Image (cartoon, rainbow, N blue to C red; front, side):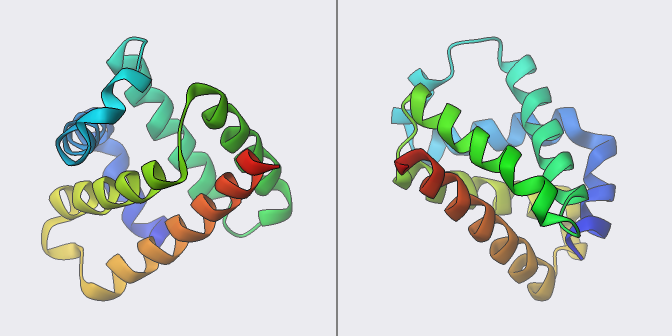
Length: 128
């Protein structure tokens, strides 16, 4: 479900990235200073990162090292554990906006589980 629904978001990735960041900053204005570079570029990186993670869900042995590296880099930028919760809420909200009626309960649960697993790996790597 995650892969199938993500394929529907890719065509609107620029809009989805803007929605995500807008919601993220609305939920926690304190994270805004963590974003010091061009927001369009940040949005492209976000969409690329999610695409790589989604495509790698069937081969986590190869995907998780990159996810761990991302977690370590995020720690260097000042990302805290609680920021992952806010980002998860912003992601789920964004998916709901982009998928509309296609964001059924089971799709939301699948995304929440997937995001939770990846965020946990990133947080563990940041602490290591």
